[in-house]
Length: 318
Ligand SMILES: C[S@@+](CC[C@H](N)C(=O)[O-])C[C@H]1O[C@@H](n2cnc3c(N)ncnc32)[C@H](O)[C@@H]1O
Image 1: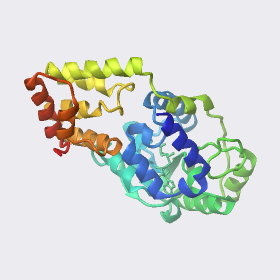
Image 2 (image 1 turned 180 degrees about the horizontal axis):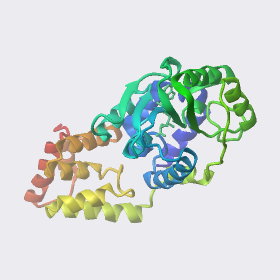
Image 3 (image 1 turned 180 degrees about the vertical axis):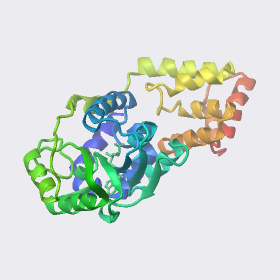
């Protein structure tokens, strides 16, 4: 996974042309799952960071129940769902078809609803009590004039007296995103767009976390867990295999094919096929025939049992 750290550094060097494109976010949605689509590969660290973010948002926004809320640049809808669960009526909007597909898969019912649109295409008027943004303006806007354009659109979309909550890395430091602007200049643009700034607060962030997110779990931990998951599958304990193979340390390693097989045996066909598809993105040359010719299992019934799971998960024969 060191190579993904190198990829991340490469991508950051091209952030101006990359982060503001739909294709970049679609590719993240294909390669990652859950919060990793919007954030970093390691979902445990994402969860810790998200908890901090939620505490801050709750403190600043108060109880959102009953509010008509727009989650602008909603990504996979993690905040849209959270607000909806608290009783807000939520629209999630994003320009990336890939992230919205993940958002829809993970949401139930008609709240939140999702809409594919760029922030530059927002033309709603007088429609929302709250507009919420997490990590979008600093990737979508390159300069002050683009920021002002989007903020004016947001202002028009809000009811009179409506509120805007922005959570963004606003600074000129090394880790800035596309928009490089200090807080004072950012607040000045907000005021120019007609907003009154009621509060600002820092969101605790450890740059070290970003590095940790890209470092591999050590083999002494991942290999035994992968073997344990296989043994549980072989013993027909698919539920236990699923839990083991979904652990952060093993998930997204090549053990994902066994996870797909376990899910298929549990009858979770759609989830199994999704895991199989994600496995094939990282291992495009995998075939059941090749696996059969290269694995050391001697017991034909155990081998056939694995092959049965791979087939049910939709992994390619040859
Ligand atoms: C860092 S992610 C944050 C996603 C989400 N707010 C969250 O916290 O999970 C940035 C999101 O902004 C979206 N985005 C970037 N530029 C955009 C634009 N011009 N219009 C709409 N969405 C955009 C991306 O597709 C991506 O989902």
